[in-house]
Image (cartoon, rainbow, N blue to C red; front, side):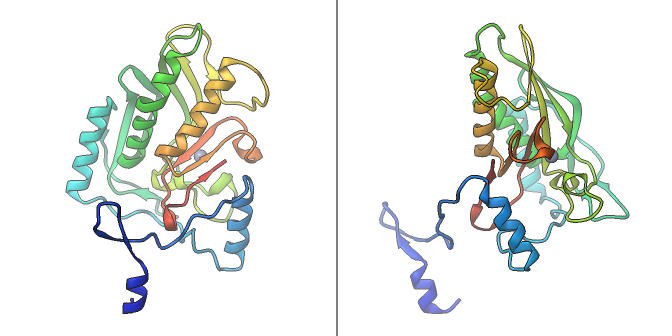
Length: 245
Ligand SMILES: [Zn+2]
């Protein structure tokens, strides 16, 4: 980086110290337009926000241990399991965990294999948002279980025969299908536009808060492939960009 550019990126913080300014200023993007923009950019080879999909490197010991500590604090029951990989594709997780809960008293069904950082994002979402929100629901009582459709699985995006590997292939993603409660009926993820029910309010709250702990949230209405679940992943993009629809 040349000196002038370096100076241009420095900003004075409120505390009076100098800090690096973000390299990319966030611009408002119309809802629904993001994927089209990214897809067009990918086709012309100019996509900057989407680096090529590749399995993340193994976490360093300290990072991994800190993450496992976070899971314990969040009430996420996790066991470390052997690395998973696929010989034919670039799928795999170097240091996977298998989780059976996503918070105290909140089961994950069935047990799910993912990266520790994905489990942590799930645990934070459940603890910070879903559990408190569930207590505000009439009739149902606290959240007790989350059903998922898939966590780690070696496949391409939207199960297409070719194209990019899904974030599921790297242990970065989980598909949430339904929420269960201490009493009362479960809330399956489904199209609920203007339903006017507590279930709709809960699903909407779950969906919007998920984007505070994950970086990708796709659900009913984003496209046909996501009509019956919330796809949540922790894919890292340039500038910290999040894709939440
Ligand atoms: Zn998914």
